[in-house]
Length: 583
Image 1: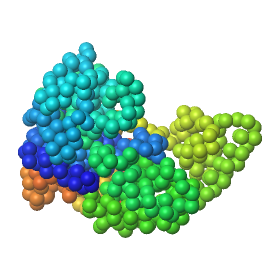
Image 2: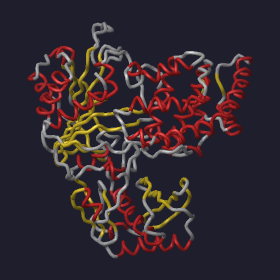
Image 3: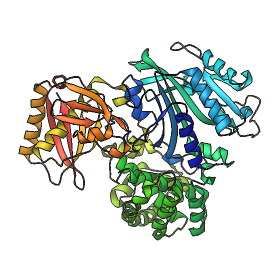
Image 4: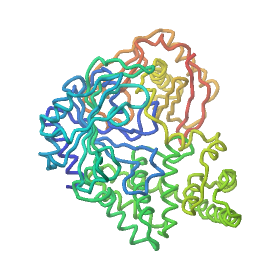
């Protein structure tokens, strides 16, 4: 069964069960202070899981483009991906365990045709924070899953939370029995032997973790996630995602072009190219910080693997075109963006190509010297020197070291790269915490302050200034906006004074739900207008600001304190960046 068929079956199934289909949120989050990319389907819905009313109601379903960067180094094996699509359905205080499980079982067995005997499930075994989830087990028994295929595990396996704080709860996971021989008498879904493959996760979110304590949420929610690539693999009877119709045309083409064949290299090229295409399509651009460095790292790693198996780098535009052709049913928007995507990725490849050739040559000298001395470890100083002298990225040095069966202490390397701590290694291990997941008091204040700053810049610079992104922590806010010049001291002062004037006026912040078309006609501003559903929430700050936004915000501006700009700088071509604090 093709991926597009599985996606359509899923959305239509839940639509027929009174769920509203909502659009995928952008891969690059809007106004989310906590992550570089959208990492889960529930991420854009956190305010609604916490009790805010969603304009489309209490039953929702969608497909969500996701990217997780903590597995970049693992890509190349038979299962890891950075970019993936998550199918999800939500109950926001509507149905709970029994109906959720009944729908999941019906979809798997009737819509997808998976035999009931192929399904095993896991439930939460209970601890001091939450009792044993016997109700979930009973719900599965009602669907025909026998006791011997129902397993109970602890928080490490059957409890889900978005980071360290936020909405959470016990979950039930569904596993597909591949038919492989068990690894032993105790083989069960918790094994990594490959007999059992997790296919769906239903989280019963009824708790909020804050300051290490669990309290009940105001409503019981259901949050589910089903990975499209994994389900496609199973239903097509393939051994890995790379054997499916999503990846196979690219894998085959690379094999045809390569003078040397290495399946791990082909997987890395194929996966990283798809991820790069999706990031660029949603507005990402290579840079030395944050998500821009993740994109740069993906393109660099892909380029080096092409070099390694001797694929002519001039073939990159053709591989991009083939990718887009392969993905056009799933993501038709890629067709219109093909030229832009190609230009961004090829330009970055061109920049790295010379560095790669020179760096690999110098790295070979280091390897030769180390082996002649009978050592098995590359000093972190050597890796730092390659970067400092030739611009050779440390993650590429790490890959090369492993290929030469040499050890490298990346912790020591990290210590030498303190000035680059905001780069990909740090971004890769970020979890979905703080910000909209924990919704702390300061994050809410900074979120509201971005609206005031946006409005002030429109008055001080010109009305065509638009927000291009933001990043918020409990300590500061960062705001990117369209502008063709460095702000003068007077412009910065006027902007700062205007924001503080509105704060002093203690203006009420109000929210209303309206049709998207009506919101735009009313003058409300937003990023990614095409990604919003038909019904939207609009936040107004008196007559000062009106924006489509998911929230949350303060009730009135007087709560914000004193606004101070601490830095104004270039972010990218035609985009400036302001860093500011609330005192």
